[in-house]
Amino acid sequence: MDLNALNAVAEAMVAPGKGILAADESTGTIKKRFDAIGVENTEENRRDYRELMFRAAEGMKYVSGVILYDETIWQDAADGTPLVDLITAAGSIPGIKVDKGVTPLPGFPGETITEGLDGLGARLAAYYERGARFAKWRAVIDIADGIPTQGAIKANAHALARYAGLCQANQIVPIVEPEILMDGAHDIARCDEVTRAVLKSVFAELAEMRVALEGIVLKPNMVICGKKCANRASVDEVARRTIEVLKATVPAAVPGIAYLSGGQSDEEATAHLDAMNRIGGFPWKMTFSYGRALQAAPQKAWAGKRENVAAAQAAFAHRARMNGLASLGQWAEDMEKVAA
Ligand code: 13P
Image (cartoon, rainbow, N blue to C red; front, side):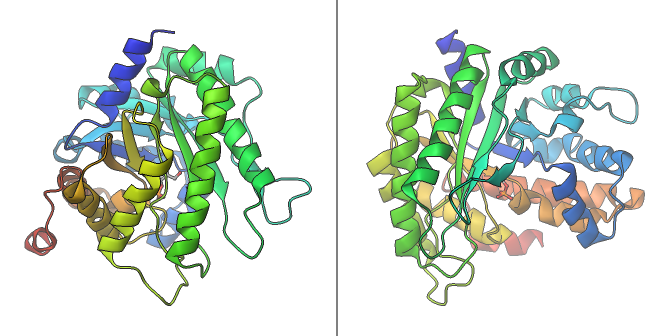
């Protein structure tokens, strides 16, 4: 393992003014997005949609890396150019989602474990050959009555650490993603408590598995209330509490934090990231690794029609630029209105 090279990739992934585009929806998840815009979920439509983003030069200026799904990393653009080559030509780093999704954890009703460790070393080597320089593995933690349990937290944290070690052995930077879902009615204090417990466990397992923290990127949820919580927290409270929780649990050796959007609205996700970077006072870069919060607008503008490609690229560029500015603490709400 060449840790300096891993660290250089991790630093590039969180370079100031840029962030990560999570375009790694599985075939089932992209179907939900396509259903919402009336697009048939065919291999060609999935390719055309991803290709339009990777060719959107104005938007890709703010994208340090792109997380791909297995199908996409092997796909070629309509003119035969591998999609990974479009990403590198745009100055961005190709990455790959390597987990195989969640399955119920036996003995833990309502809780899941992420699968995909068996054979992962060989898969990582093939992805590296194809151009991937980072990977993603998502652990999912739900908050409800009596959950999460310490047992499920530990099992998920251990799988993340095993994955991270395998990535580094294959010269790939692991994005370590323990996602606490914002479904449900829990308040921000409960999210604060659970996020602390999960991150504490994740970093204990990473240490036990001898993962070099200089060569990872953490992708956490923000500390935020559940979608059904009546008592909404302000942007400032989300920003302050998220920073506080990370400071108490994440070692300074980690180069950067790239948040998931997790179902926040586009503008909320941008405002929260911006607020954290305005507050500052933490040892890491803080940026985005958004899926929905970057792609909802371009998907709506595209609607599967060739004549809408330019409008979709413009919508993507706008969201990417807004989030790029938020990664510097330089976003303002009126910038949204000017462009709208
Ligand atoms: P969202 O930003 O839509 O939560 O997606 C990010 C991601 O990659 C979740 O695993």
